Length: 366
Image (spheres, rainbow, N blue to C red):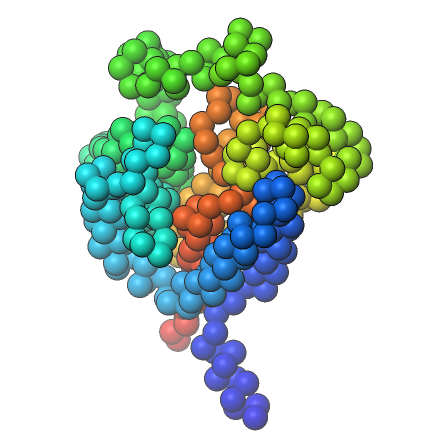
């Protein structure tokens, strides 16, 4: 019996802290979603299926050795880019955007896959390069990043393209990008803002930015979402109005309550206390990832954990900043809380990779 336990212990790779906290977050997400969908049991059951499948998927992804991800990173990246091209050609169009492939049993948002494969590939490409990384390696990485970002942007999907850009730049930064290069690049970015505004943003995206600067300019049009979100969050007070008692969501003032603005529903119904509990769980997960990154076995694992963890942080930050009105509305789900199968599964896969990087240790040969 002891031998069997030893075999199981040696074969199964598992981080109990991440698994328990992510499971708790997922259950809370189902509770919040039931209220945000106004008691739609079909929506909640469908999300529950994704949660169960995602937890199993996270466990399975965590079992291979990190070398499996490193050696196959280029293959994964090419496959995800092919899916992006297929989406642009054959994708399902919703509200003028082609972001999804209809697989019959499941509608896949392909950009959610490349959001993972890009940082893993960059970590594999840069992990053995000398510090600071030279201009050639930087140019190759940036070319790849901006190519993928542009493919996602033209779907159009500004929110995900921004997250992909951030994910790629995180890996470059963690891999040892020189501060001089960062400073020069930031200066060029600022100078190119007029060019970006006139040539790379859709009219509705420019309108969202203008609305951010002055939401009252169009309170019943483009400014409606932000205004109603702020009302919902502010009206929650300390303890909230109570479960399923939020007026903004349940009287249909607040749009996209199941996805982009689910945090506003949480704040209105559970108040400041509920928001603090939710943010505390997010913070614990990020601290755990930081600890795992610092104790990973090699540079590739540290880069991958760091990049995927910062991607998780950025998604949370963008969603919260969006719903409180300090950045434009870009369509960004709250991880493990918002409705959406593709986004949900992408985060389970990300944390499966993080657990793999953290739990596999190399034996020291004497």
